[in-house]
Length: 93
Image (cartoon, rainbow, N blue to C red; front, top):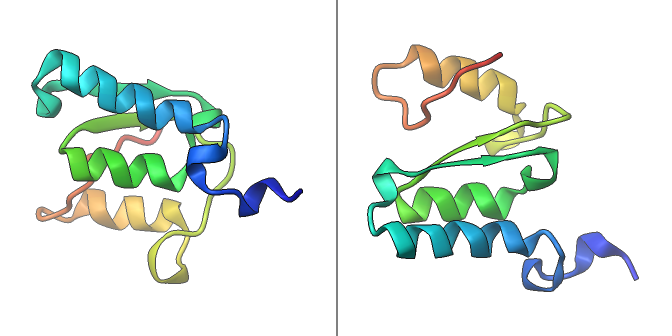
């Protein structure tokens, strides 16, 4: 079975999304939360969930992944961090 074809709910990494939602429910203040994850949490669905929930995250990535419009994430982050209207708050270390 190809693990990339499984729905996110059936993958072990789904726990990152569940934990994000649980912590928001417990703290009841998503905009004050900053979720920190390792390379294992570098999953698109987590990024989407965090944005939908109005919370923040810090993820250590291991590759420069493709993002919107077929562009690399690193390029989008750099452009966005230079924009005054950017939706991402990013810090490259």
